[in-house]
Amino acid sequence: MRSTFAGLNTMVRGITANQVSLDTVGHNITNASTDGYSRQSVNLVAARSQAYPTVNGDARVGSGVETLSITRARNVYADKQFWAETATQSYYSTKQTNYDKVEAIFDDSDNTGIQNALSEFYNALQDLSTGASTASNRTAVVEKATNFVDKVQTAAEQMQSQIGSQYDDLSSAVTQVNAITGQIVELNKNIMTTEANGASANDLRDQRDLLVDKLSAYTSVNVYESSDGMYSIVSNGITLVGGVNRLTLQMSDPIHNADYGINDYNIQIKESGINFMPTNGTMKSLQDTIAEDKGYIDDLSAISGTFLTTFNNVHQQGAGIDGSDSKLGTSDGPSFGLNFFGDNDTVYQWDDAKQAVKATKLNNIQRKLEPKSGTDPKASVTVNITGGVASTQELKGINIIKELGVNLAIKNDHNKIAARIFKVTEDTTSTGANAGTYSAALNGTGDGTNAVNIASVINMEQKNVSNTATVKLNGTAVNTVTGGADTTTERMIGTNSINAYYNAMMSQLGSDSESMDDKADAQDDLIEQITDWRSSTSGVDWNEELSNMIMFQQGYSACSRCLTTMDEMLDRLVNNTGEVGR
Image (tube, rainbow, N blue to C red; front, side, top):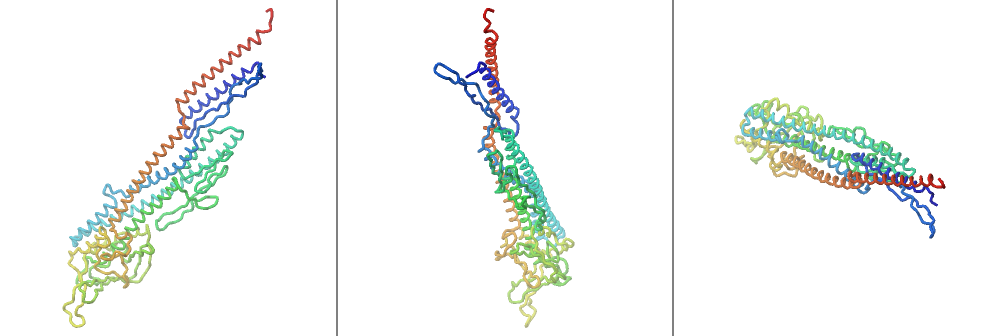
């Protein structure tokens, strides 16, 4: 049975509902620019009706409106899509940044990079081939070689620094992930407490989803919501957040990597000590770019190793202009069998099985000429390098690059540069048992044939590299990186020339960088579409909110006016009836 004052309660409910709705509109407007905020709305339902007797039985009279709940506008499918694609966007963006830095290290646009230094070294050798006895040409060869070595070693050092910076960024990312997961756990607790009585913790949920947005940039995430409103976040099978619990990531202890001269690190789960392997996002990209940067050091070491092996081998086959040609093969004769790069008392070989440069250091080193005997006028000369083996090292990566340097013996005496070749001459004066033998001699001091051969290593394929002598270590052939018909023997740079190898390396870098730019741009466009998709649901529309504001304001005023009218009616009923005769 409705009471006399039931209408007042109906209007009070209407006023209250419009006031709550207006407050919510204000909340939306003030948070329109808040990161992660989702538009909220009040859900209203008709209040329970009351019975009113009529001649045909009881009728149901409405009693106003009730506020059912305040909910946020959120598209869970758009969220999941955003989290998945944000990880990919961060992966591409991080790789793109790394490519930009690597391109700056190898930049040859201003003719100050490795390519220019290699070209100048090649040109200096070409000049030497036409003027082998000219002092300025010999000086230029040493200076240009030294400049080239400096460029290669500087680039390698910069790549080491870049790798170090990548590990610093990775450590920072681990710290950020731990901070984010810690905040998500706290929000899980607060949301569970707040919603225990049936309410919806909209603002807390927005804050949590914003943290997941940030977390998804570092690694791939899968988000699951339990019945009590708490999130569980899984990445690559590892539950980083499970309700009120979480796992902590940490960087491992440094692992010294002698091949690259750096310390490597793994990401570990502190609670278990096992490695955490991100599958996407910034952390995965940092790990991948570190591996790529090591690859550039490997490429530089391949070039450096070819100079230590193949280039030195060709240089050892010639002689300088120091000493007397008539005393060839003696301590007073011209230098031969010398390294152009590396240590003077070390023989360098490429060990393909171990993928290393074998450096054999000798004591009491001696270099001897051993012309072959026979009837073949093309018989070659053998340069036999002998001595006691003091040590043997297997050089890889940065250690090959560090070993590269112009031989100090040549730096101190440019006349030791082996621009000339040996020639085999027949002994026509001997008779009897010595008849038909051959001996080694040298062309004149102006001969630059071996300088041409040396230059060919820089600018010609393996098959075009000339070999005019055999080089042995204690009687055994050591340098098998031959040219001519032999293209089966492995070299660090394969069958390509050094110049072609470096150009291919730079072309690949440019291609990879351009491809990554295209991928990053496409991913940015995709993220923009997904963001617009989310905003169409969750974003605050000023026009819509202002329209709602006017609607709720008018509703509030109408309910207030109706309340006033009912109050006047009741006032008449209470105060002006039942006073007969007055």
